[in-house]
Image (cartoon, rainbow, N blue to C red; front, side, top):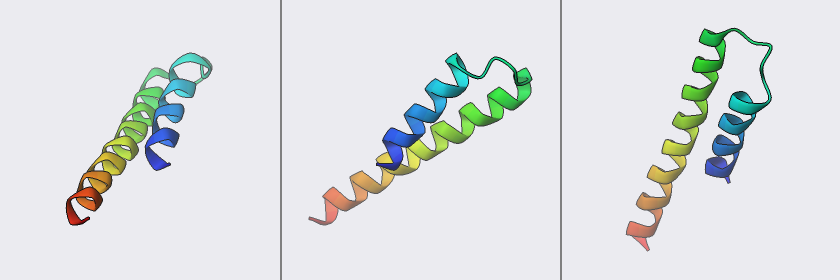
Length: 50
């Protein structure tokens, strides 16, 4: 669920948020990618324990 939110966050920032400055959009994209990466990492760890 967090991974999907992270991807949606990046999509919204890239396509819908045209009013923000470039550096702020870059920070938000990095945040979305970190959320997605964290979710993938947790999913891999959870499936490894099962």
